[in-house]
Image 1 (spheres, helix red, strand yellow):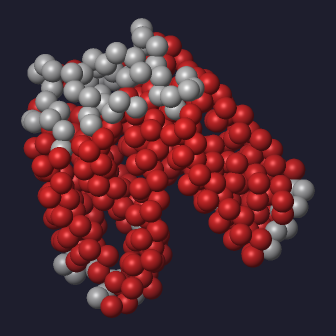
Image 2: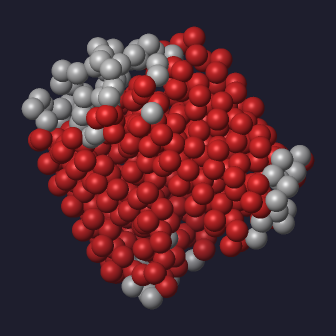
Length: 383
């Protein structure tokens, strides 16, 4: 790693403690299919209202990130993180009491804002890890596990407790993360934060643009991976099996990042990820049967999961205050929202080839911007 501008390097134990909080904050979005499914099956919301709910949860997390950048860093880091946790727990608890749709939406706004503050604060800590790429790879693996647990337990909570069961569980778990405060790092600012607290610098700005473009491309393909397979004349069973293989490939990316992050420069890792992504997109385009489709979607997801930690390594040193790292989740969240919307239009017009080409173009442009953002820094960057 290059020399850091902040004084504190976060220990592994502190990262584990902060990671527990981060995983809890990310569950609101990671487990959204299970949450929305419970609301619609129980008749609490119809499909159109559920779509608005997803939008509110996503937008409020962006609001939370902005709140952290503009005001949260005026206070000690642990105070801001605690505030975000309490806000997140309160919003989830109020969601259980939402007797009307408006009340439920208002509660989700509170919970999402708290989650945005939490995720931004936690990413500042991860940016100060000794090896940010490895830290984020481990965090991604933990989020996959927590997502699986949520998918397994939330339907049971919905049927046993009611539509509000998952929100009640999220509120309790959020409050429980305060027990990890003893191990949180002491991340005080090295100097007072003034009017420039929202600044990213040129390096950080280009990095966030690259994050947005990259996640548009990846989410556009992933959200419609099933539709791409169906359009390639794959049976439902084959598509399901291919997606299971892709999930395993994404999980396998974590040990690969751990093994290679100290041996590769960030630029080398990004180029390798780009090459694997393009191969995966090519295999999804040629329509040559089940084998190429399964391999293509697996390579695509592997590259996505393996490349993101190195992208965060660039964000971690993009500006002196860590604002870029804090805004990473907001930028990727916007990309995750925009990608499926764009893909949905193209898929509905039976333009899967255009979608694949667009994803390839955006991925190449984003990797170029990441490289450019990295070069804007004076010092070399290693993962």
